[in-house]
Image (tube, rainbow, N blue to C red; front, side):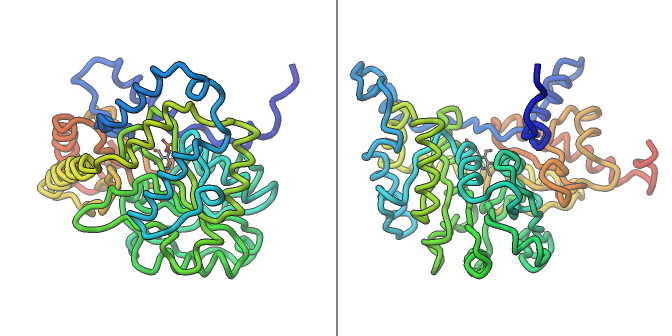
Amino acid sequence: MPDPPPVFDALPEQYFAGILAAAAEARARPGPPLIDLGRGNPDLPPPAHAIEALRAAAADTSVAVHGYPPFSGLADLRAAIAEHYAREHGIALDPDREVAVVPGTKTAIMLATQAAAGPGDGVLLPDPGYPDYRSGVALAGAREVALPLDPAAGHQPDLDAVPAAARERARLLVLNYPSNPCAVCAAPGTFGAAVDYARAHGMWLLNDLAYGFLAFDGRRAASVLETDGARDVAIELWSPSKIYGMAGWRIGFAVGAAELVGRIRTLVDHTTAGVFAALQHGLIAALRGDQAHVAERREAYRRRRDALVGALRAAGAEIDAPEGTFYAWWRPPEGLDAARLLAEHRVAVAPGEGFGARGAGWVRLSLALPDAEVDEGAERLARAAAGALSAPAGAARSS
Ligand SMILES: Cc1ncc(COP(=O)(O)O)c(C=O)c1O
C-alpha cells in the first residue's frame, strides 16, 4: 500500500491518548486504586433542563430533527448564542454572520487554524498550552511558533519574545484564557495587547474560552471580543463541555470576526455538515435556561481547588492557587515528577512537557473528579511532596 501522506509525519503524538494509555496500564498493575488527576473529563452532569430538551427533541421523529441538520446550525441556536454573548459580555453578535456552530471546539480549533493559516504560514501557540492546538497547525500544514507564557508574569503571553521573522510569517495568534494548563485568567491588558499585536502584524487572533464561567474568587472570564478593536480581527471558541458538563455531546461554537467565522462555516459545509439537531436543542435549553447550576459547579471546583492547594501547602510544597478552570499547574519539588507520582504513589497527572517546552518540570492536576478522589489524590501528592522535600539534596535525583 502507498505510504501515508506527509500530514501523518507532521501530526504530534496525541498527548491525551498517551496519558489515558499510561493511566490504564498503571491501573491494571496491583496496588491501591489509581487516582487519575491526569484527565480533564468533567464529572458533574449537565443541567436537567438541557437533558430534557435533548430527550424531547430526540423523541420527535420528524425530518427536522432526524434528517440532515442545516449545515450552519439551527437559526434558533445561533440566536441563543447571540443572546448569551449579549447577556454575559455586552456584545451584539449577528447570528447570521458572526456565529458558527461546530461539533465541539476541538473541531473548531482544527477548522479555525485551517481557515487562518496555510502551508508554511506561522501560528503562534501559547507555551505551555493545550496540546491539540499543535494538531491544528499540523493539519493546516502550517508552522508552530512558540509564544512563551511567562510564569513570573502570571503566565501571560510575552509577545516581545517572538522573533521578528517568525512574527512576520504568522497568520494566527492563539490565546486560551482561562488557561489550560496554567489555570490563570487573562490579566488586564492581555487581550488589548494581543488585539493591537494581531492588527499591527496582519494576523488573526483566537481566544479559546473553553473554561468561560470557571473563574474563582470574584474573577470573571472575559471575552476577547469585549476588547476595543477586536471584532474584526478576533474570534472566540466557546464550549459547553466544561461549563455545562456536556463534553460527550460534541457541540460548541465560534463567534467573532465575520470573515474568519464565514471561512469556518465554509469548512463545516465541506466536512462535518452540521450537528444532530437534538443536541442543538439541548444546547439552546442550556444557554437560555436557569444558570444557577453554573455557580454550583464553580463552587464545587473551588472547594476541590482549596482542598488540593491546602494539602500541598500544608506539606510545605509551593503552588499558586488556580484562578480558573478545573486544573492546577504545579511545579513539584526537585526529584518528583509524573513518572514517580504514577509508579510510587499511584496518582496519574499530566506531565507538563506535553503542553510545550516551557511546561517541562511542571505537571497539570485535574479537579474534574469526585471530591473523595480529589481529597485522596491531594493527600498522596502531599505525602509525595513532603518526602521529596525532606530527602537529602541529590538523593531523589539518583534514586
Ligand atoms: C483549552 C481547551 N480547548 C478546547 C477543548 C476541547 O473542548 P471540546 O470538548 O469543546 O471539544 C479543551 C478540552 O479539554 C480544552 O481544554
